[in-house]
Length: 302
Image: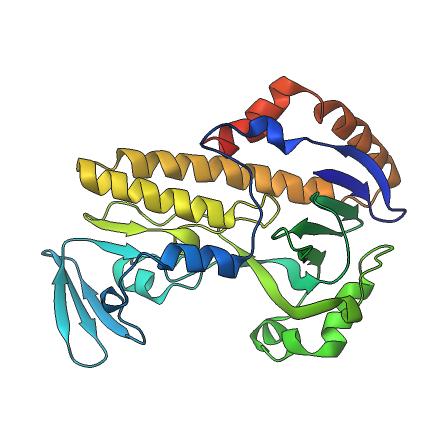
């Protein structure tokens, strides 16, 4: 993983991620669609009810769910995983837990060209972008996080995030970027929302997972990983009849959230003196095995 100064494309340092690999754990980058295909391939289609609309959830005595087609069913467990703006969560938890716009916009696309097999993080003033391979066919993803103040009306204007003018304005905000619209396909932009707290996790046989549980800044590449690990800990909690594994995952997510916010802050520095100090510290820490094991190893081998 290379750390690069965006305004001059000079490499600052790198971290060899293979040092965290072992027989059963390997750092991997891939397409989201490939991951979804892998996860769905062993689930019988008849076990999935598509286009179902939940209208009510009653968990006062067991779990009874009402659907839009006037059908009611009872369940032993409810796992809520319908995203950051979860509608199902609002049926269960009385407190209003709305994610907050953190004044950044994400830009994601498929990148044309030969960019090698490394993960490269370009750090600029109030922005950073990452280029990483998603397979062995020389295909790469491009993800940028750009500071952008938007009004409440702009946040509600979904057409804004699809307009070519807006996408170009985001790209032009990246320092010394050689990336242009002609190099990108499947380009999408969206406002970055983050969670400020967890819901009250005291509902019997009700679990939350993924962004419905907690959403942190996308500066640690841990969103999908934490969703999968949370789902695994929910399964272990169900099988063991205890919330121990689930609660431990909550503590882990809190730690990752703090590191994600710190990464975001350090990647977006704009003051030349602060940038100089950051780069010096990065060069030292990137080769410090004790720091790397505590900051990355404990997460990658969780």
